Length: 307
Image (cartoon, rainbow, N blue to C red; front, side, top):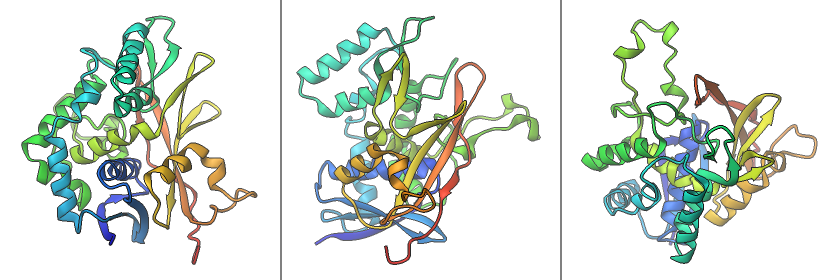
């Protein structure tokens, strides 16, 4: 018997909410191969999980509390002492070790973090995924380790905020560029940037990180092509679908890999049957390598009644 669990905090029209929903499905599927995910309209698109092993949202929170304290996440964070941008030989050795150890999860994570064969010609470092949006004193892997530590201090509160809401942004950590609400437009604010600390929804960021293996990166003529991202002129967009029927992790993986053009009808005017809407968020770059996903826009928001 499958239990239908509505997760009011995971809003699919928001890039971090969508990524966290995908990551939750991946996590649930690791122990329940029958787990599924859909979205339902409740003022906005809200994630709904289907699982035979967990009865309600409290059970999902408890499941995630056990996960974050198990040490499993560290395997994806501690493959290097540095950050994702490492020497190609270091990255390749990490992939070889994961394959030799039959660690499919780590291998999938590595191919989502960077593209083997794509090298920065100036620094001779491997080029990271389009989801890599930090620079300077910020570090992607260190930022995630900090979030893990803070979530572990009170995991139930962190995951209840992420899954149930409302999102109150009480955790002082960087959202890694995945949450448009955390962009600090300093010229329009009453406080200097040095007086403000970054904030995030830690539980949602960890689940979003767990979704990254669904978005592998490959080298493409010296550039990095990351699943889910498209270019329009000089702009780069993260695209994702919202669907109205329960699908499994394997079906989600196939859906994401087919790309935005397959989510739309032949005339491009409406989503295909079963897909309720398509969103995209511009990856805005600024400074020396910093980026953030901007407020999303609807590529097609037609609700397909009875689809």
